Image (cartoon, rainbow, N blue to C red; front, side, top):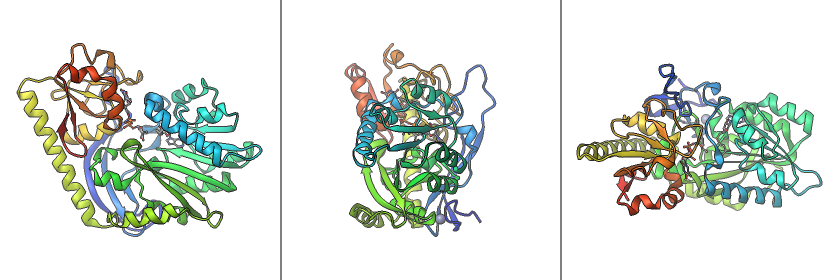
Length: 405
Ligand code: DWN
Ligand code: SAH
Ligand code: ZN
């Protein structure tokens, strides 16, 4: 029997996407053939309800020195983190010499405003090339995985942290016990551990099945995060719904008894109970919706191709690794995918090997259809590529269901 990585309870398998590649491993066309695959399967804990993967991909395979994702590629996300930094500066980083640590600081999208405010800070991220981008903005970064030993070293060198922040990273870390022991070692007595991650409730409700890929080891809910915090001697004292990445939650965790929980925690928990996130039938319904989306999307792409239309992808997201590999969408259906990340251009998408090209080539000439893999950035991308629709092109979306706009 599989054991929950958080509480040790029994885990019940509920979803299986089969053989999948490492979602960040964009392939050099000159060196194909050595890709790592794993079984992407998900279960939920019958005790604490935490949704988690059944196979762990080694962290060094996912978060390499040349990890290609750059957070600052989206102006909407940049604004989001600017506001987040402002909020932390105004509420938590107000003492005489505050200290903020970020886990998964990537290219410095959040810390840049903390650094500019002159506040002591430290980013921790194993992705060295992304960290170089952050350093060029005047941000201090340790190129390392955050875990208990890193946290102890930081504490010894810099003293306690008033805020430990993390976005879209805590859910990526299977060895969660080491993270919490690290937070315990590093956090000031009344400090806060603030992290935001995609929300399980939205993923199920809107069939965002592509939010499930190697890196998203856990899919958090308010209930499971509350139980997780308690398991490690902490308490969930704040929860805030966020519109980014299709729906996320910002959790504020403090030492048990240190702070009074905000009323929103109980409110969101009550609302969450109606979603049935601990019930097998919820996942059976989710699985049926996923199969329907796969069948509808494949049928649409095949019909359009049979009619002679050219289809491309837009946004070489890591999410799309699951869509393309689970549905079997290769270059025969989607001939290329356009993406603004320089590090991905000229490479092939993991597993199915669709070539990644710069957006400057999208309109030379425009295709008939573009499959929007970066659906979470729909507004930003559709505004940027207004001319595509004006010249008769159409977007294909597959969330919350398959449709053309
Ligand atoms: O959680 C994670 C998030 C924060 O980032 C990580 N596990 C990995 C990664 O996931 P993703 O690749 O699914 O993230 P995004 O933000 O949906 O990726 C958007 C992609 O689209 C990027 O490759 C950049 C590209 N893009 C573009 O070409 N033009 C994005 C925008 C906004 C654009 O205008
Ligand atoms: N916070 C950014 C980046 C998210 S991508 C954003 O929200 O856009 C996830 C990042 O976490 C990557 O840069 C990856 O290298 C980093 N990461 C993964 N495991 C980590 C760990 N144990 N400690 C610190 N960073 C980690
Ligand atoms: Zn559990």
